[in-house]
Length: 329
Image 1: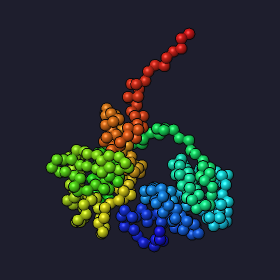
Image 2: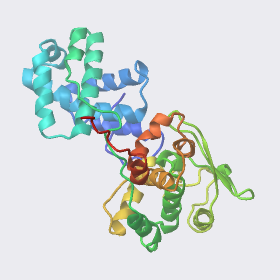
Image 3: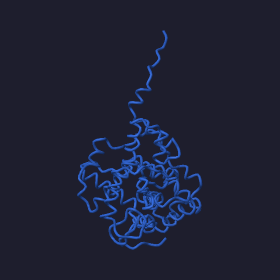
Image 4: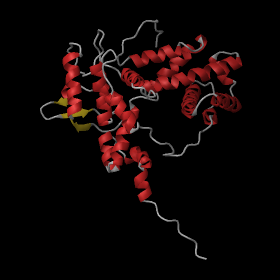
């Protein structure tokens, strides 16, 4: 891994890797070569995806910088002096200023880096086990979809603002109508749309299944408007392209940005594309669709992945309630 110059990066499949390197460059200079080696180890030994490596590295930078600063030594020497108490102290201090999601990310990064350090002979294998575990309960949270009022505002407000209103409308309609992931919209290709049969296919993501949907009138019109009037002339087979040359595929991060910007223009709190996936699932449940049907439409292979949505169907939960049995006197 080499050092990256401070030049603008056009999105491509390699841009996530480049973003990881730039994240490393924000760490202490003396630790950067170690962090680059750690990133390579995560990819080659652990087989992690590029986006996951970026998250691990962002947390590991803070951890490694803190350990070396406290010891006043090089990375290899500082970790040889590290103790279980030192790990716990760092994690407790970190947790005071960070929420649960950040603490979970940090714990994962610390365990991974300590395993990496073990292979280099800096620490004992037992030290990775000293990272505190965070108690969690399965299905303890609730999926945060949009209310009907907010969804109507998002879809029904004027689309004239923004640099590419036809493109933005087509993308938001796809996300809201089919509950697909941002990566599925990003990788949608022209051959995935069958205009004659009025169908649209989305590729599998995250180990799930490909999904096949009917092409609704609203989605067809929004896609047609974008393809006729805004899509750059290109031989690229992806549906959504960058407006500036070179006209590469519009990346998932750009899709997140345009969805958040659309919500702000509609006077809504900025949320990402996944909020529309949650909205899609909860609305299906509320109109009587089974959990199995929802799992199929979302492209999940396991029902466990959508079990949490049953918690938001309050009406059906009330119907299933029974009187508490009285104790016989």
